[in-house]
Image (cartoon, rainbow, N blue to C red; front, side):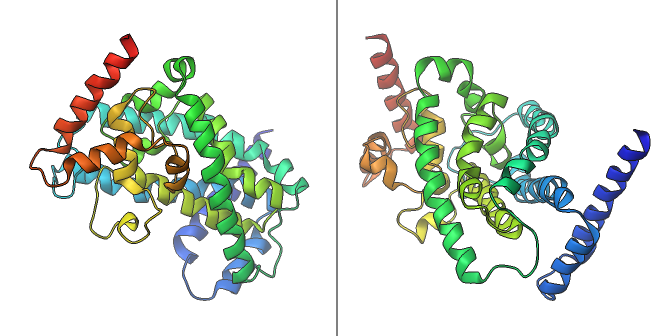
Length: 304
């Protein structure tokens, strides 16, 4: 048993070393060949996916934490800053959740992905196939996430599960994956539904995972930059759209979709957000003052 664990540990270390020393934009086919020659499909799909997820998540999320710690207020959506204790709590719980929930889930889900046709064999799929699959995953994930997220905002599920994620009314990048373990499993299904039913190449799955992580970190970053994707693509939600959802906290907060805004528009769950923007136009009143008033109205509705 000890030898088995040691072999697995060495394999993971080898993969991590390769990620650090060999990952580059050039020589893509050589890099892919190196991976398939030196690691099993199981190691790549489970431990490889975990390492890539952790690397992308923390490398993209930590800068937003540092910006908040250093008091950078330009482009910040809310003036409030999280206390150091709250920031530390988030990081510690994330490490526990990722190790005890995410990693076992990636290991245990490997048979499902292989059964559905996922492979890491060469050659890599064409960019047209990858682009089509990623676009399909985006649409599927957004649709499923919208309804799953909306269900989590029903009274009982919000109180017992989703309220954990909403402990941070002022989100920063790393809070994107701060959630109850049951929510991680429930909403994680939206992310992996597309790959499960289509059986894409492992590298397509990795690319999709990277895009999804970057998107959710940006949506929770707490900063609305002039170069944010929401300023370029009209249907993209981004940080400003999702930050409103966290500020309102309660079951009527709206803005439930993960990436795009059209689902909330179609089903009228962005009315509060659009009302806030219309009230803000042509006034000097801060959004935070307007949100407080809307929050009071929501509380009155809950007690009436």
